[in-house]
Image (cartoon, rainbow, N blue to C red; front, side, top):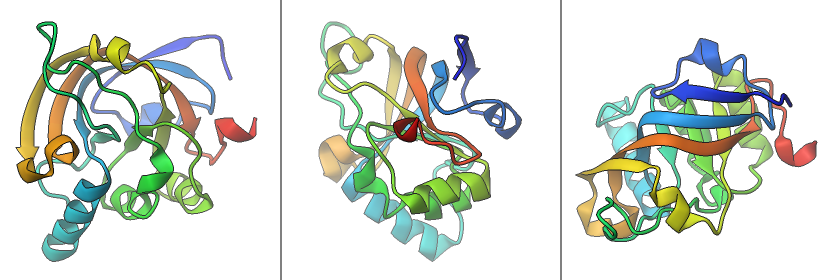
Length: 178
């Protein structure tokens, strides 16, 4: 863990990811995608059918979030991290297919840790209970697919100085074990 706050530009470069360590504080700026449980089931089915990630998701970051409707002249009134372990069933396959980072809250499985090491990917952790504050970091939002899933739809968002910590680094170190 370092005292430095890493300012990271999305989409993330795997060479930059190699320099991060579990516990490092980061500020993310740029595009990433929101997706939760039901959306992951749909995305995995499309991946299996097509053989590659659809919607330009290769090289991108997925934020496990279900945002609320727009409010206060912002794209969302609130957007907070979902418990990441709920997406552990999908994370290894998505990392293997080209997702470089995921973002949620809480611990991940040993399979996810292994997938981070094998693919050079990272898991970012965010703080739960700060969804209204985190919404202030969202600049734009665009529906991409799965509109019928409501808050679990696939959305492309642009974030500015979105605060996270490295939860699992490319070496498999886990902030929850430190």
